[in-house]
Structure formats: structure tokens, C-alpha cells
Image 1 (cartoon, rainbow, N blue to C red):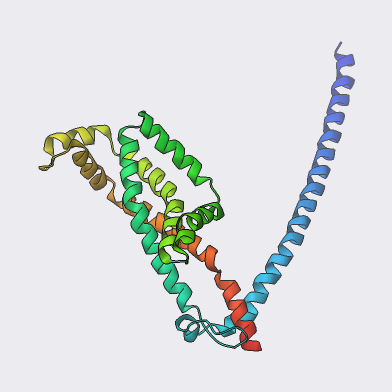
Image 2 (image 1 turned 90 degrees about the horizontal axis):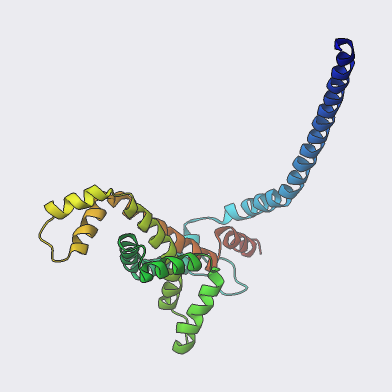
Length: 247
């Protein structure tokens, strides 16, 4: 029996060795093809970045950030209005969204299973998946069209809608990190406040104040990013500015 089993074992061993070699060869070929395709995909991206840097960096100066855009066909000009507009719209968006988002987060963290709490959480999840262009169209139909003109107010309202999901969900998660026994202890040692909700809110904010401020700042960064993307990007502006300078 032993004499019969040895050839079978050797045959299985040779077959497994050959299969392992084939798998290694196929793996090496596929990895090589993946690397080659990735390299081919990166070539246009690297070329565009290098071209923008080469033509745009010489045009960066103090006047570029402090002057208004030049008229069409003229050389020079800057992005002062874009910078000022970004700051104004971002501040308005933060003014509209941060108080509402924090209050909604306090409610959903305190009453997660109520109909309103479930609706707020569901609406936040849906709103976080809405493309920014749809929100912009909503702001256009809601404010720009009735007012008959574009304004920072309309932009601030639209961007605040984009900020709300980030502020609500992150603040709610921060509030959940505050232990329940800490809140209960705060009920016995709280300052003179009229509402129990105000006591819990004060304690929660004090217990996670750093996270609260960081989440509000993250919402502001989201709004600033959306404003910049909605208006223009710096590489594109630099390229246009450089092309005008070369002409």
C-alpha cells in the first residue's frame, strides 16, 4: 500500500507545483498590465499639472490677489473679487447652518427614536447624497429667480444646505461620545438653568467642546470648498492669467 501511495503523492505534488507556477505567472502578468495602464492614465494628468505650473507660476504675484479681474481681451487682473466673495458666502453659510445644525444634532442625539428624530436623521442622510449642482438649482429657483439678481445671500443659503448634513451628523456623533453617567451627574451639579435640555446641552458642549468646534470648522471648510468649486479653481485661474500675460 505504501508503494502505491508514493507515486500518487508525488503526482499531486507535481500538479500543485505546476498550478502554483501558473498562478504566479498570471499574477505577475496582470500586475504588470495594471501598472502599465495606471502609468498611461497618469501621463495626461501629470502633463496637465506640469503645464499649469510652468505657465501659471510666473504669473503669481501680489497684484494677482489684490486686483480685480481685467476686462475681456486685456492683460493683467486678479482674483480679489473671488476671494472676497468666497469669504462672504462662506460666513453667511456658516451663520445659517451652524446654529440650526447643532440644535438638530442635540435633538437627534437626545431623542433618536422619536418620529421627528428619525425624520431628521433620514433627511440628513438623503441630503448628504444630493449633488451640489441640484442644491444650486434649488437656491436659484428659491432666491435668485424671485429676486431677479444673483446675491451673496442666495449663495450662502445654497451652501448652508450643503453644510447641514456634515454639521448634524458629526455633532451628533460627538454628543454620543459623552457618557450617560456624566450627563446624569451634571443634572445634580448643573448651574441654574431653566430647562433640562439646556443643562444637558451645556454639559455636552463642555464635555466635547473641542470636537464641537472642529466639526463646525469642518462644515466651514466644506462650504469654502463648494464655493471655490462653484466659482473657479486656482490652477484654472492661474492658467488663464498666464495666458493673458503671455498675450
